[in-house]
Length: 178
Length: 209
Length: 169
Image (cartoon, rainbow over all chains, first blue to last red; front, top):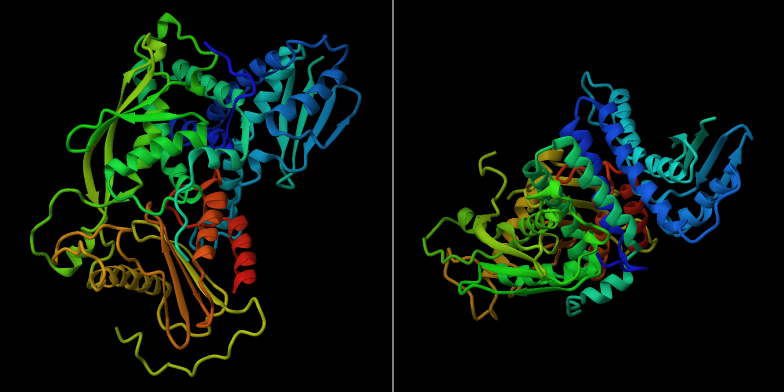
């Protein structure tokens, strides 16, 4: 098929596709099996990350070490996806890297009402809150999958998780498998 | 203050936040592939893609209306034209042609020469029967259903005031089907949009409540 | 309709002096009459419970819309009673004013209705309503956790809306 370099679509296309893809797996297919939904969503992200990193590294030399590859993810790769770089990179020098985006686009519009004042009956707001937290976390499996897929394409097997304790900042923790 | 006219799809596309289309195309592709794995039946995948599109259409219609400055949807014909022409441009950056209107203005074709969903896509033989872009038909269906237009059927009965109010607006239920698909060997993408029925907007409360 | 002519009528309030305290409340309804959002900033008087209040407001708009169109002296195409009006064609009302408040109203072709109640001397708020619709699009419809048609609980939207309304009225 024809390939259009530099082609763009409205951001809403990606946002609404992701919202709907996550909701399809979480609410329609696996409403009672969140761990299965999570695995499927992560798999979709993995595939996307794998293909994207293949495309973005086509014309560059191989990376010499893990740090170089991680820096590629933080700069070039992130810029292609979000038009900005990762804001902060930390490592313990033993295979764990923390990539922090201070304003992660895909979460910038996520908002839940922490008080949920209508939960007056036996449904304590703590329960509603944890439900909301779970719904939010479902939106993190896709970007985690993307990072894992991209690194795996660069020959680096790893596990990726995310921390959103101070939204809209988001930290991705990459643990490289020895 | 005269109301500002509708904006062109090009102008809106130039002004909205845009992203790399590869991300969109590959995400859609990966989703279709995952659905094929999980659902096994191609027919079921078509159905789910259409449902996903419908839900997306319901969400996107307000962004379309807010950004395009379209303040009225008078009838099905006008609404279908503006959604196809302005909508495809402002979201996907592509031009769509609306053509083949039937005599009573309830059925038309939307033709796409270009389609970012299918960049890099080749369907394997195992996907016979798959409407790869079926999400698009769902989006159009959802968006049109959320638009209130006037009832085009003549309505001549004398009714009470409450009924009068209730019958002034209708939402448009449509059926959207693929007539041509490049991935299936045709020369363009052609969607047929057919108005099935118009559902009146109802006064939501009972009088005596 | 005793709610309009009761004994509560107060003399005209003073003209706004300090900005930011002139908006009383906002309502957002969807096409099914569900009140997606009600927010008040300055409403010392409540005569009804919340549900009745929302219903009355929705009913008021529904009737007023139809009556204003029916009374349009300029529309050539005005049908007989029972013949549907063309929404958006001819006339539609966008605000009314009493001695104590002004109500501004907009309705989108998707049936979203936004109502802003402010000080009677507030100017034309049509652009502000459009802006609020854009906020709704950006912060409600684009919130991945929002289910269309459900009451709006988004902190982000409410904070932004509060800020904006303080700046206009």
